[in-house]
Image 1 (cartoon, helix red, strand yellow):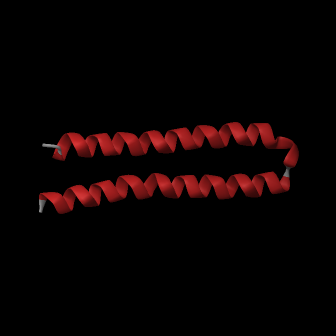
Image 2 (cartoon, rainbow, N blue to C red):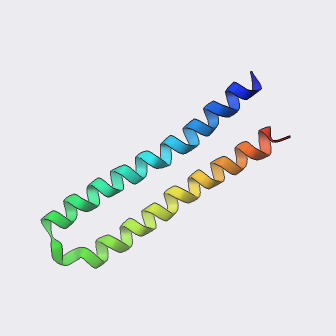
Length: 70
């Protein structure tokens, strides 16, 4: 049972940030299609969103490792 819980928590901590990255990428491409002159501003905001999403994933995986690691 402990392994199933660990796998579910790992799955949630990986799928959540992956969805955020997909949504940010989709929105960034749509924004660049509408206004190509705003590319530097859009790029910076996309990079920041990717960094935050990945940091959430890493923190989630570290918590799972600390809780269930032997």
